[in-house]
Length: 223
Image 1 (cartoon, rainbow, N blue to C red):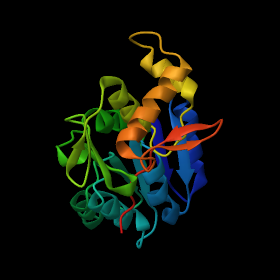
Image 2 (cartoon, helix red, strand yellow):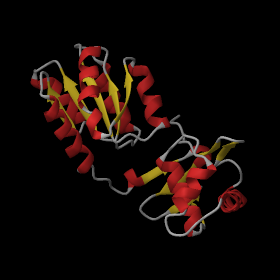
Image 3 (spheres, one colour):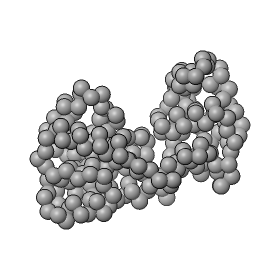
Image 4 (tube, rainbow, N blue to C red):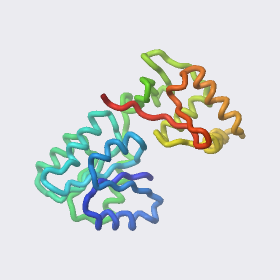
């Protein structure tokens, strides 16, 4: 499970990371709220944890910004403040859970698991807006641009879904081949052939490549 944490105070963050070592969780920790939104666009997280550590905390506004941009990752707010107004704002802005400090680390683990497990998506939230105006609908396995559907084979769909799952990370030809080989063995030249056919249909503006590194797809950024 990949988790993003925004918190300035380091002691609790370190305790959380130590506690979760046994549960195969990876953490990206930020102390600067201005970097979080960009990070969420570059990676897909299972859960985002934002801390309200001061009265004018950016965590609440960041929650609102994430939801306004239709990013439906579960958001857990950790709050040093027990006033009802903070809890009310948190849920109104779109948090999935709200935890008042202090709390037990096992309670946090349980709430993380519950938030990830019960994160339901509607149709709009399964739609990924990709760079250069491409749109991918995970419910319908449909790639389109300007409302025109682009026909894809099963293998081409799987490649695009895999690159979206690892949004903005360069995925090697080897790992894509391994992913496709779950049903039957696929070699590296076959992967390159599928990528070429996707580009024949979409041009070279959907899938980026770097020689010797791999391929990636990135989100469209809000204007």
